[in-house]
Image (cartoon, rainbow, N blue to C red; front, side, top):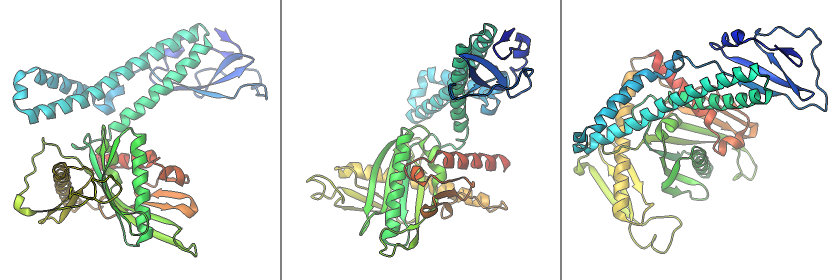
Length: 422
């Protein structure tokens, strides 16, 4: 079978490519298409290579994936998750489950996570197989517009597989939880406080990109500009798992807008991410260990905000942990939220203690530990570099506008490797 400009493979040759990826390029020639593979599946056309001219369309890439096999889900361990999903479904059907609300909540959360992974895998597997069948049929009938459409569908499937693989990096029990993100300005006065406000905006924009809901629960304004500290409550699927590797020290180097001589300044701010702890996790807090203060909320607001002592500060004396909440007019609700933050911090503190005990037995220290510089933002050189993974970009504006996907994905992959190696 022939097409304009090249040799079309037989069905047997196409089936031979199902166990490997076939990447090819569609090049237009006088409103017809020829298939030029990167792999030696087709023999080269004996004629001289075709050269484009100004009247032709630009080249377009087409990726066709191999037919999905049973090994496609190996890295996701779908078989084990599917068996566990069947067990969870049977448990949910048991009426006695709801006699224990905490356990029922845990089971429901696990079911949602398993449904997401198993359902996505089955849908993608069916999509790959359908695309392979349509590709074979359209090639046999020399239906080049359909071949191109299959390529576009394959690219969408490839993107979804990438998202599913990204979720595989969430390997900690609290990864599906909502989270709190705290930013604290370092030493340096106005310069550091302005840097803290830039980080606040960056993470709020990133959360919007990921369709997370963000609530500013506490903010202490700077003396001249910026902020001294703030706390963001971030709600969404895998919010903590996505952001947990952002904990650490962030360094900014720039020509200061607050310096009349425009000298180069270095500023630091710390970011601390910890998961929301729900009622399914028991954390005992002795009321005698708490020091609770109420005060008038600060910041912009209506007439009510400065007239009542609705803001709440809770100090856990044994650990020195302090939580503040002032985003609600009700002192009672602010107290509840501050206690919830305290529980989350105590949980994260215990997790970090266990991690530190484990790393003492290892030769290398963890590169995401609290207090370690993790990323440098050098604005006058247009460079942002992650010091843990080596990921670097020159588009500083996009990063400060919330484009953190490359940095977060690389740090999560690095975490997966270190865990699997230990």
